[in-house]
Length: 456
Image 1 (tube, rainbow, N blue to C red):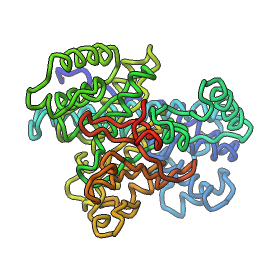
Image 2 (cartoon, helix red, strand yellow):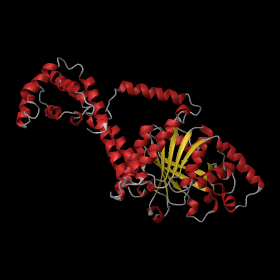
Image 3 (cartoon, rainbow, N blue to C red):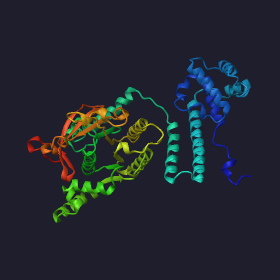
Image 4 (cartoon, helix red, strand yellow):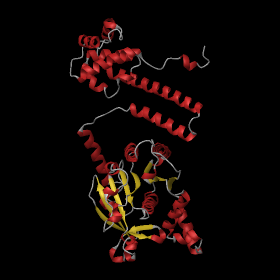
């Protein structure tokens, strides 16, 4: 006898619930449409029940009546009558269930047992792979988490809602917007007036792409609106940095907050006044809730897991409110064998799914290709997004960054950043200008009659 008691136990199942569903379907065929939101043939534990349900489903898809005689004829045609226990067993199922009233309840039992069986199977696979030690610990953890997440996804119940219910939720959100101090800002305010007026802020469940050529200021721009949000809105934000370390990010934030020259800080030439400014700025930033993940080679599974953990951790404080990723093309693909275009497409879809799952904005920085360099105005376009058109497709909003001074020999334009709203699914497109204070790595609202310098 085995020393492991689990080996002698049958996986969880309910023969009565499975018979209840099959008999209920024969009694009330109209329940099939509801059942298909809950279970599939493979969710049945007994092979005979799987075959009977699949035969009923095939008949349903062919718009044929579901009754005892027609089911028997279908099984006979498929030479499965003996496999399911013969006419006697089918009749027994019919007679055992007097009504189809409890079909949905029985179906939920079947679904729950199927999920637990999948967990047991996956747990055994994880245990086997752990003992084999053919993968690194990090790879094993990531693969295990992915398998468990797939179980949850496979059991997700489809649902529909009426327009009346949707309108009720819409009016609730409209009322919430009316209660805000700034009526035009329905989402999370970036701190930049013109940008917020055009977008209404960063909206929940939306994927925002911030794209530019290298060295234009994507990271600086992202850190600035993150700083505005954590200081002014006082909410929790996750910044995933795949390019720079947390120390570099902290120095950038300190310089931006304190208005201290970043180059002087880097070479160690800061004055006593500047040190005091850094201390004061640090006091402000210490009160914020910014989480930085600078682990290199992160994939979407790991980024998603980190965001979910922080959402749980910040539950009492309103949850995690924003995820920023720097940058999209550095996210590790789940499969290195796929073509690069398909890898990027999968990543952009997962980013969109993460935004919808957590119901918060997800902002991903992205590189654009060299096409803009060859144009006379050098302004980036949506078509310039590198490696996959799916980025443009999945994004709800695309912000393209452009610094005219980088191409036009400096001058006053060197302190100007153009933000091109190239796509906005639920709002207007257009351009706006920010002032770039390069020495502080700081962006501010642009005021034309003040020489381009304004306050936040």
